[in-house]
Amino acid sequence: MAFGWKLYEGGRTPPLGAAVAPDERLSWPRTIGIGAQHVVAMFGATFVFPIVMGLDPNLAIMMSGIATVIFLLIVNNKIPSYLGTSASFVGGVAAIRAQGGNSSDVVGSILISGVVLAIVGVIIHFAGARVVNRVLPPAVTGAVVMLIGFNLAPVVATIYWPQDQWVALLTMAFVIVCSLVLRGFLARISILLGLLFGYAVSWLWDVLGGRITSVTPVSGGKALPHFRTDFGPVGKADWFGLPHFTAPHFHVNFALLVLPAVIALIAENAGHVKAVSEMTKRDLDPLLGRAIAADGLATVVATSVGGSPTTTYAENIGVMAATRVYSTAAYYVAAVVAILLGLCPKFGALVAQTPGGVLGGITVILYGMIGLLGAKIWKENRVDFANPINLVPLAAGIIIAIGGVALRFSSTFSLSGIALGTIVAVLGWHIARVLAPPEMREALRSEGGYYGGTGVALGKAGSHAYGDGVPADPSSVDEVGRPGVTGSTR
Image (cartoon, one colour):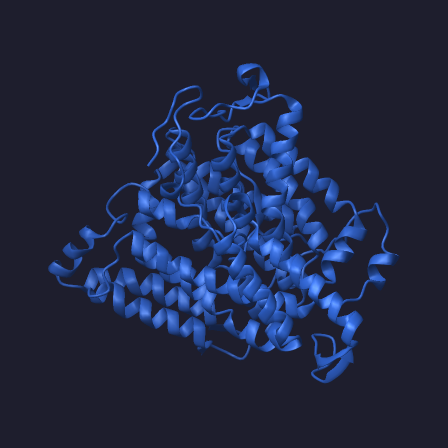
């Protein structure tokens, strides 16, 4: 492990067609500037998802910086990446809380998933990247990602949107317009811009119209008058201090509810590695196992103190595509900035007071995007739903997850929703493939990914874009050559 980044061309910004490699850096002032851009890019999703999971956003920001450092160390500084809060666990967390679980149960369950993910990463490291698509072909991965996202629809409809439907509608519309009208970096932070817009509208309506009467999570199911924004806790919070830590508590039933997210995280990490590999023109497949194990270990460390689960962020791929700076030095800078933000309780209090209506407008897009990314994986891997191997078990799994179907084994143990849907989708697909006639199995060969490597198409579709509305698809950005070499434009 070396921290001696080579100075790129005297530290100057790379000219058109050139790029700064992961083991190089610009001058430190420029590197700090790039690192700050990475913080802004990951910021929106990294603190929105802890809020919707009921976790401390301040701690999530701080632990995301620590998780990023852990990731970079494990991949030997060869894969530039920021580890922000994962959206894949939101559905499972909602199910845990619906069954009476608290934050200790949530982080304990996610910690177990982190251990499983780390073990999977070690297995992939020694068995080879091909094992990913053998065990989790694109048809199955797409179904799991889809059911995780669409399972969250009732959370939007029953919790966030009703708190302030007009602010939710305006926020949703603003995000949609930003993602379509804005270009480049601003488009990638449309969720963050939407949150700021919704916050401002909520405050303005409080000033002009006074209180709103609606049901909130703390009103006991009753519609009570309240202000949309409350800055009292912000004023009382300190400028400097440690965030609130939560000890994990382990419960088998709850752990099963979030375990399916591991499949989504494998796809996300595979997508990130493939995307960065294409952009930097380096073969990073041998590091896929390390990347997955690093993400798992980072999740374990983060949740061990009450933080949020982590994953690689496509938002930051967008920053790299725009700047052509792949230096891991910039990610260390971003990590340090995030850690410092996490040590400001006043900032955390401001984030925690985000109005429910604003979250309604944002989550209706975010949750839908998670689900549609599953469809994107199917499309880019040419999954054939005329083939019963794909159609029948995946259809059953998706409906089970979205509808909250339960399978009760006893008064204390049951499988339902995402957990049961994932089991049906994964095991059902493999059983169907074994039982199917030869011509159906042969038809799978036309699908991208299942019989080939880690699957370039899976790599593109796997990258998440939950926080920016712009998927990190390598085919949508300019190709880059090695540092100092002009690349072609697609």
